Length: 297
Length: 287
Image (cartoon, rainbow over all chains, first blue to last red; front, side, top):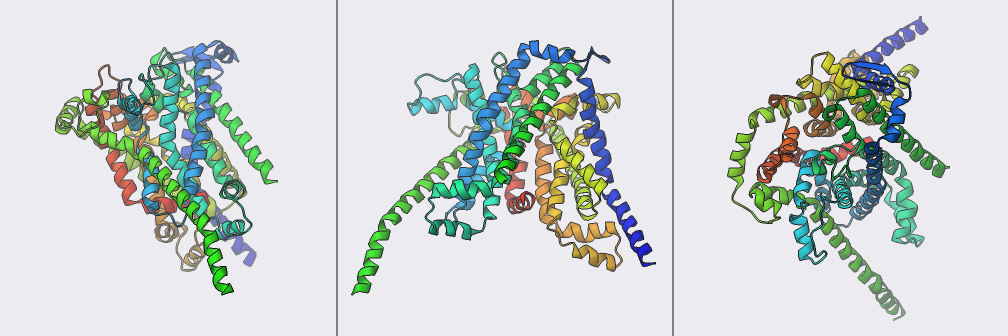
């Protein structure tokens, strides 16, 4: 009797468990799982308009010969390799400064540094475009400070255009990451610092030996998120530089968009490029997890 | 006597570190002030820009101009402002409400009723979170075009309404929820869904608030997907309008800055009125 009743409760609870998650499961199935599978299959097909046929690895061979793709790949990696580490170190340093319990105006600093995150990517991109025009504000300020003698062609020069995108990304996302670190820092027991101070650990030593190891899960989480974000960069590339000059700032996502909606659409080839992004996101995530796992042992 | 000497000696000794601490602490304030200035500066530029002519903006003139109303007037001529605002607002509000409802139901469901099969589904869902949107947008575009649903609000909302990230967020927060409350509710004869709406929902307000901010911002600011599915001018959202104004051959930056301010005000208000919940909610999710 008793066993029967608990089994009855269990099965009704099991049914409720499915009910609670049902809507999300169905929607994720249609709008996440199906597209992921479908674009994987599409990446082995080619064609125009509505007619597609399998061509095996043909799209991959085409990729290798596609100079614009290679350029976009290099651009995307340049952003990722230079921007993410700079931003994470900066965010960690700011969070550490802000975590001081005796700091005055803490609320003001925190709010100010977080504020860029409330802007939309499009809005801030256009703002940066206007500030960094050749005869514009930033060049004017730099000339007045005697840091440069001739204006920097931020948007017109391939090198400076990349730097501009990196500056913009760092402005937009450092505060966001900082909030994650600050929250995690506040969860660290203050007595740990106390013990370290008594043992004579310097501030720098405290940072490298206590803060960084304790925050490792958060650092890992934010770097995975930033990696994925950078590999998918689109809004900035479109709205600050429009991929130019001569594709020098074109990202993979921007190139996919161009193939789909600017040129004669080839869904198969675009899907192949999108799976290049998937491939790199997966590799980087596994690498970062491995690094974290090894240090834990 | 000896005691006094000792005390003196100590104070002399600690004078030096105190000075250093003073210096390093003022250095700290200087660094933080500079970073804060960098962070706020583009906002100041945005406000000044909205009051200036396009020429003054591209020439980098830092001053309050007198063109605000002129810019507003020009903006109103160029775009159907009420229409654009209501497009953005409808998509954002409807999208946010449904995302929160679905994601909290699922996050609660996964955490409170555990089973091996559901864990597998959960892990599969987390895996799809790693797949960039670029890899989904092609089939999604074809799906909506086959269903003749392009150029509709639903097309913008549906692909992101079951946000795996927000499900994850709610599940993490549910871990700190006092499950005995639900046990007690069961004894009192409440159904599982009643318990969810009458007990879980009110006690997780800060989680909902934080999730609401995140979701609101992502709908309000979304660009790539609306750019793909919204094709006629009468459906365009604010971000699409800003982008198309800025990419014209002769962009009027005064007008654009005014539009950017209009786009940014709602998110600024949201941030300043709910800042506390935001940080609280974030604490819950990272743990």
